Image (cartoon, rainbow, N blue to C red; front, side, top):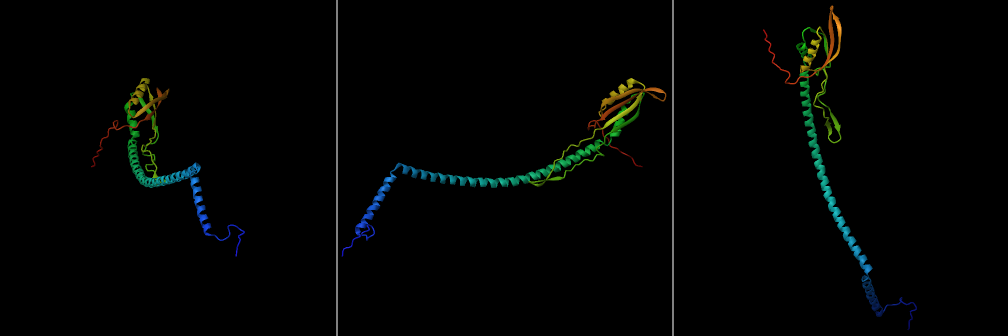
Length: 249
């Protein structure tokens, strides 16, 4: 019986057909070899390989750099914590030092201002010339013994250390002592000598004649004058301190 295949390629495959498939595979490999020899194809493959290598290198570099930065960050955080503690302790020590120093300066200021009035009267009486007398003598300004001064500063809040001590000035600002003297004299030259003697005093300065006029005192013609001056705190070399001994019977 004779069979005729009217649809080519759908019939049974013979041994010849198997050989034809092998021939087609060989032709495909040959075509691929021909394409590989194409410079554009080689360039594309080379570019892809280079891109892969560059990407891998960049990834490795970035990973290594990220590890180093993370390690540096951890070390910086540890150092910051340690230094913050050291700075906090330093601030506390400085606050204690400033408090003690200001307290000592306050004690010195009070000690220097205890005897303002005796110092003024002693200097004025020592410089007073003959035929000259004092009508009134007074001073304005308070001494440190009566002026309240803060020696300890309360701690203020801080974002880093919780509470930090506020720095306070260690020097004590002293009030200015102004002296006003009103007197009479029968000799105008005595007034000039009186002012010069007051200027020589280490406890008085800026002696200024504010007014001078003729006046009548108990039927006698005198010259009435007014002097303004400033009191200067004595230094350790200007004041001689002696012990006070009192015998008790």
